[in-house]
Length: 166
Image 1 (tube, helix red, strand yellow):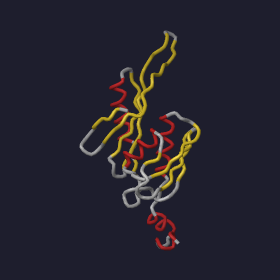
Image 2 (cartoon, helix red, strand yellow):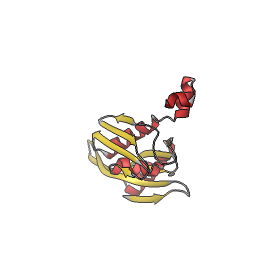
Image 3 (cartoon, rainbow, N blue to C red):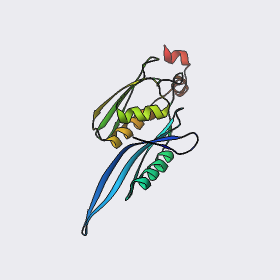
């Protein structure tokens, strides 16, 4: 994995580079697809992909795409997620579970990278279905988008936080 520094606060990491081909009348047009994760380590993360004929340009394109598609992840005590959540994207399914302090990030390469760059320090994950890094990354982002804090849920239901937590 390639670590790149985009600005003072954002870190980016390349999770996958693939050679792809478009078959045309004149033959195969080869290019590279880079899947990149960008995060600030404090609750913001994004996944992007770049597709050009040269790897460095594909990575830069992926970084720009990831920065455009950043989401905010609610964290409990700055360490873990508020509740269990499942994300699905095409053939990939990702299950994210909160974990106790000191557990660490129990995850595969793709999901683990996204969690680390989002600032999650303790989490249990399991992925099902597709092992394609781009599809897994998108499923993880879908799961992280579904997270809600108890305060948000209470506000949406017009109840007190104590009622939500039981």
